[in-house]
Image (cartoon, rainbow, N blue to C red; front, top):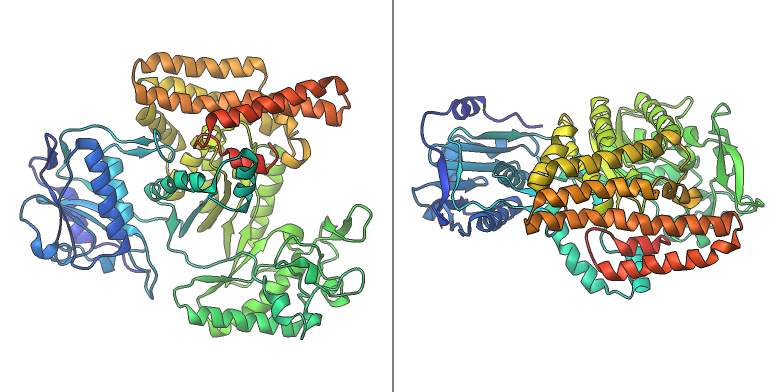
Length: 625
């Protein structure tokens, strides 16, 4: 890692000098000019675009842009590295990875960040710096699109003459996956009668929200399924490299791109190591490549004696998919020791040729429990898939498992599905998740990759927002983040909106403590019981009070209407799930008509809403809602 920013410059700028604020826009007219270097990075170009767009929205003024050779002498916003920033003592090459700074220096405002990794690779430091400045000017991004974007109206825009912002991320990857268009969404769109083109057009707003919250990072590499083409490449010549099935064959042709391997085979291990060495050597910018097994598919894990001998006899008993079992499940000792040994065998070979590089793999599926005897080689980055905030028993077990893996591994990343928990209801576990982001970062977490952000912003938007802010700064105060969210977005109605979110958190805490909810596929109807009429009425009272406080402010009222979708959909979803449970699980035929009516009411609501950031109806339809 490169050295920190030049201390003498920081001291000079922070100390400042007595004088007027630096004015960028005066009475709706541009005063400052945005100045870039003669050549610019992608981060610089995006920073310029973001600054111009938001400042124009704030004030109506469109700031001119010039390159350094044609730069005026007046107030300037120096964006990205240039000869001008270097002459003032701001050396972009001296910044730490992704470090981003905003400084007033005389009549210049420096907006600068680290935009390139050592050895190659694009970073977004200058873009991060631009959004830091916009945040300082009062902009917020509550959810994608309108009215989730908060841009205060100001005819005059000025910054203090001692302004000094500095950010260097703790997390090398702040991964938060946007659930954009894919085949699942298309299936949901088909059921709704909507088009992919309209869905994709709306989702063009997504990148701006993620950019504003500094999602991304300097970490480059993969850790997902690594052997999707192995059967095609090696199945004919080396069938012995693939998992022996209970029927005595090694045929993986039915598995598609999810073939299972005979992980104890030394020739297979040598081939994988050679592939990974070649992959790393071909791309010096990669920090990590994957050796993670395929999961799912129609075949099971290897049953050969050698692979079985790698399992530790004292490992916990789990259930495996077993094609010829009556219920296709079979009890078996955990495969964690087997798979960690597999990872280690590859890692030792790769380490000799590619020191300082990493191999990524998951602690997941049948190899999710903590290995009994195997520790992990130092060049392995192990990914933990777990932690839930809707079931205390599951949460405590997951945290214990995470701690066990952290004790065995030098490097661990977090790749949870927890954002999908409680799907279809307004759930708020923002503070609990923020607590654990901080806690796990203190335990050495450096990479996160959150899946299942299905874009249900009226149901879980606050949790998405707080998570993004905590990934940028794991030491932040989640209550301060929530208060700022409410104040920036809802003004005079902030107290009532905060009370609404606190009430959702109390409901979520009840679900968590009861530990009855086992997931969407098991007993999703349980969630409906927590949203009875009395509970929904109390939630409604908070939003009604917020509307009264908002007065005639159309923007704030639109944001409250956005949150209203959470209550309205919870009622519809509850009615359907409880009626379906009564009919299908309890055999109550008298509820059949009620179930059909509730299903139709929910369908009508999807059509009424249309495409909206409040609710990703296409994903809900795919999952059977």
